[in-house]
Amino acid sequence: MKLTDHISWRNTLPLRLVFYAFFALFILFNMLAGLSSVNAGKNTLNCVAEVSKNTGALEHAKEMAACIRQKNGFLENWRMRSTFQVIDTMPNAPKEFVGTWRSGQSNCIYRHELGEDGGFVSTPMKCNMSNSHYRGKWGVHKDKMIWLANEVKIWPPDINTVRWIDKDSFTLTEFNGTVTEFSRVYEKSSPVAPPPAR
Image (tube, rainbow, N blue to C red; front, side, top):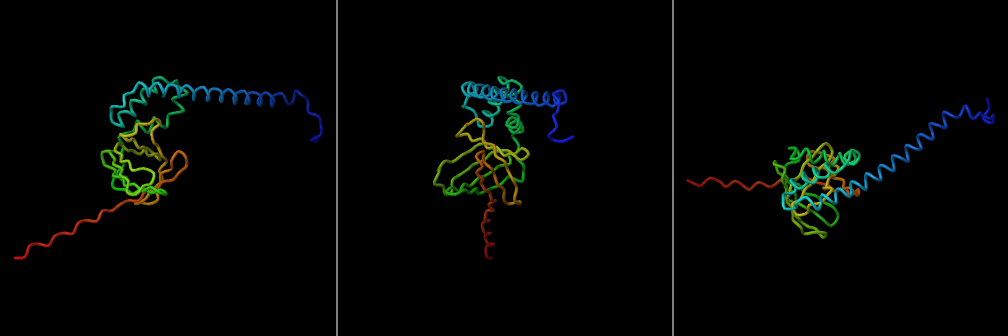
């Protein structure tokens, strides 16, 4: 058989059917994905209006997740499952992250105290972008790190991909692709006073 030989319509029918079925499923999937995205957006806006902001950051995030889950359908919840999983695991403060850290980007350096109880305090050391102090809850689930600030309650919450470099440094990759480097801060211990002379 040569490439130039005529192939009968009957021989190509199964291949055509598979192609058309795949094409139809592709269109259907994109239509459903678009519809679920719109629905999830509406449900989120409704929950923003319903859920009180007079609670702590973690309580607010858990209430938002519960509200959105209840209003969403299966497809919407499936699309948002990674966000829900991170929130569900909190409070979750792995010991290797506990301590004092310095984060740096161009024009902005922050100091972060990450507590064993999942609380954090972030203080600007040198920052041209912001002089805001933040307190709230932090946590890590698999390769994701979440920050829930009491001062700014947002949805979706600030969830970043975390990557360890060594025991004293890691990076966070923001949603927009920006990478923030964290390095551990070792406090200088105060000198021990000599015993009184006798």
